[in-house]
Structure formats: structure tokens, C-alpha cells
Length: 349
Image 1 (cartoon, rainbow, N blue to C red):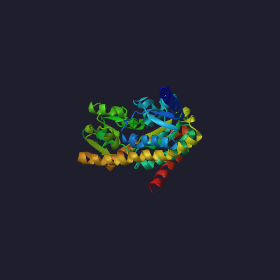
Image 2 (image 1 turned 90 degrees about the vertical axis):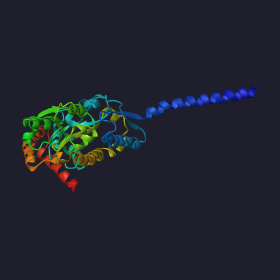
Image 3 (image 1 turned 180 degrees about the vertical axis):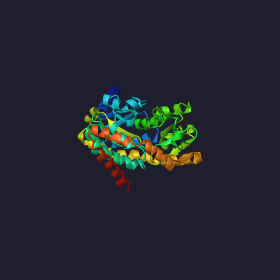
Image 4 (image 1 turned 60 degrees about the vertical axis):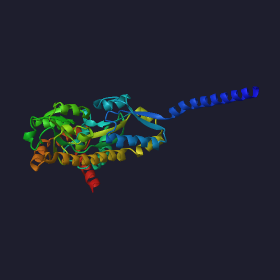
């Protein structure tokens, strides 16, 4: 039956041609999409990632109509203290992380990390982005990357393995994990033993008794599941510190994105992204605070006026020291401080 054989041959040939055409189309589709690698060093399921950055990644794909996609790494491409450099070197295309993990590299951000000024991380993050654009970016800070967001975290408290700290006298001699150079320097001057360590190291430091406690925001204690080792918290209104954090992209990869897509990405980044990340911190910090109060009872205390005065005295020289650094970097220090405070007050109304 030659007709049947011919028909079968035609059908098979048609199928092969169709498959070949499909295969040929696949590289073209993949080539059209620029895939950016994000350095996933923070827990993938933490709300700052799942509700914050990962949703922003989805937005990037949406606003660029699939031309730009972000892929989180299966394991860290670089440790937290190499996060920024990894983006410069192209090891990672996008990174997020605290400035304080690389002591001395970002001295200008230390002003926003000083105590008692972060009542609402969402408000302060919006103000911090504006401060960055107005005063810090013109100095050339972070000019070796593309800055897509700058935010602050919720204010930090004093979280201890045993008893709450209610005075500087009780603080002295304690081994405390510190997240920023400013806090470490000041506490050391007060007789506290500062121990450097990232959040990923905190659980082991607490469980093994390497430290007696840590200065940290409430939400990170619960978010990193180290609350089983925390049995006392001294709440410091406005925070004993706040972390500042960057969201950055490799310049070479940014240049591969069309001007149209760059504009679309910036529209959902910058101030909007900064405020979003800070607001998430604030929201989750309030939730964690209530959980702590319920669990710890009398061991969750608010720093007394006397203790606040001692802390204020301990940190009193830091703002002046920062002003010297800022002036050396070409910043009008007094104007920058006034601007940040004014922005926070305006946005808090």
C-alpha cells in the first residue's frame, strides 16, 4: 500500500520538522531573557526574602514583560561580608545586605545607625533613600554598582540568654554579639565585650554560650529562630542601633538591560522598594514584640530613663565623630543630619 507508506512518511517527516523547529526556538527564547543571579545568603523563607525581595523579583519580570528575570542562588554565592564585592566582581548580579558587615567601608551610613532615631523603619527607610540621593550618592559612594534600594531595619534591643540588662553596670563584662562597628566601639568603651558575627552565626553563638546576648531587633530573633536561647529583652525606644542595608546590581549586567526596561525597574525600586523593605521590618518587629511580651512576661522590660541616659551618654561622641568623617567625604554634615531628621518628622505626620 504505497499511499499509506507515503502518508506515514509525510506525517513522520512533518513531526520531525515541527520538533526541530520547536528546539530551534528554545535557545532564542532563553537568549531574549536576561537572567540575573541573586546571592541568597539569608534564609529563603524569611519574610524579608519571601514577602520582600522575591516579590520584587516577580515585579521585575512583570514590568519587563519577561525580558529580565531574577534567579535566587541555591546556596550562597558569597558570605555576607563579601556580598557587596561579589556584585562588583560579577560573582553575583544582585545582592542585598547590611553595610555594617564590612566595617569601615561605608562610614557615611553610620549616621542612620545611631541609637534612638528609628521609631518606624518604614518611615526611616523612605527618609534614608532621600538622604542617600541628596547627600551620599554625590560623593561617589557605591558608584561601582547600581543602587536600587537603601533601607534601615527596625531598631535593635538588648536580648540576653538569662537576665535582662537594666543599667550600664549590669552590661559591663557581658559578651555581646554586635552587628555594626559603631555599637561594637561604644560598648567596648563601656566595658562590654563585643563579639562580631553575622546573623547566620548567631544561633551557634547563643546556644554554645559564646555570647551572653546580642543587640538585635525582636523580629530577627524570631525570624532566625533563636528565640529559644533568648530569655530576657530590654527594649530600647528608637533602638540602640539600626542596620542600614543596600540592594545593588552589577553595572555590567545593568548595561545589558534596555533603557526602557531600566526605567521600568527603577519605577518599582528606589524609594518605593526602600520603604517597602523598611515597612516589612516594622510590621514584623511589632508582631515579634507582642510574642516576646507574652512569653517573657516581666523579663521583657523597657529601658528606664536612667538607663537611657547612660546609653545616650555612652553614644554622645559618635555623631560628632561621624560629622568629621562626613566632612572629609565632602558632605555638609550638619545639613545632612538636619535633612534626615526633617524627612523623618515630615513623613511621620
